[in-house]
Length: 497
Image (tube, rainbow, N blue to C red; front, side):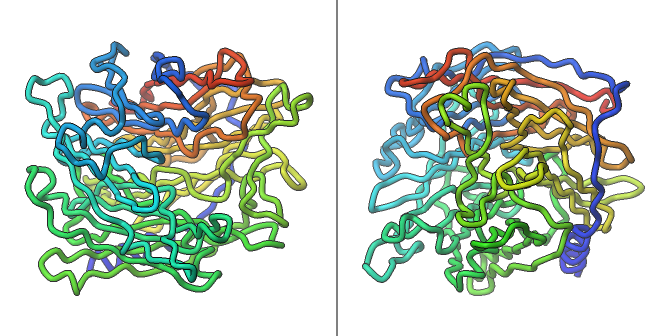
């Protein structure tokens, strides 16, 4: 009963919208610790796609960029070398998962203190591959990975030409009863247009022990064009903190309304519910969308005649090169972070962010819209934008145990090389966000519009206060071979002790 009530109130919170202005000049700046992550120079044959993401664990920080990962201690010293992304599966002789798969997410399971890697692999014949560590310590002598795979072709299905739909943009989230994955389905015979989504639940309980997992449970949503618009690029909830959700609370997914051609704004956010029953899989269900009206927003860089084109972020060199960056404003950005607060006034909170247009006219200045949803109906929503003309995009948000939100993002403009910034505020109090630059870029990406497709903000499980954020930047202008770099930053807000 509680789960049903929680689900209803959770979404009613979407109507509570508060628009914030610039941060007060007196706002206290945070102390930021930062170190260099993986750079293109460390990867033979590095590509243009970066997709920087990662997570902080109890002892280390682990980062992923296509197609490698590396672990660092919390002072920024490498604990492992830069490692090929398929290493866990090669160590376990699982050839279906060999290769440089993309759109990878690297998470830390807070409830079990384990590392988790989820990745798509294959060409024509597809697999979703998951690796779960046997310990939280990457440097331990007995550290190893338990690895698993799910053949995807039968799950994805085929188009009218008999060609398997392409699995794209996979996301993975940790819940108490499973690891939950969402993938977009693209039609290879229709310019890889999105035609639906797949959501799967994996047997987390058995995977944590290295045992034989029960068959994953998957649902496919391949409906009308309108339904596809609502289910575009689902984000599964992922737990922050060490307090589990209330027993029986199902996993939630969220998605934006991806506008149809001709629309110039949207006013819907969608929620999906995955109820898994491992004992009796026929009783499992994936339902949605439940659509809720919010204040209208225009997705970042949206063009009415081509809604999937979200390229408009300028760099100082853009006036000469005509090269602009993709804001990826057509979808929610990872993560949909979940936190359960206990005590005298308990509540559950979900937090997500996206890129929206804040300027007037098509393809103008972008900012960050965030939504916090609570089961008590008191969530907070706002837009992060400042009157400097700069474009903010590619956000990732999380909150600490004191309900402080931090959202990291890229920032760029006609007079600002792409850089890394953060804004923060308390979700229980009034007031606007404070912005701080985490790292200043010195150069531009002049030969591509690709700027990854997500970043990662995560919370340190040891104090439940320290935020860790990874993103990309340039010190050397990229005009041919990749020169991208990544930066890992951490900081704590004074109100969290």
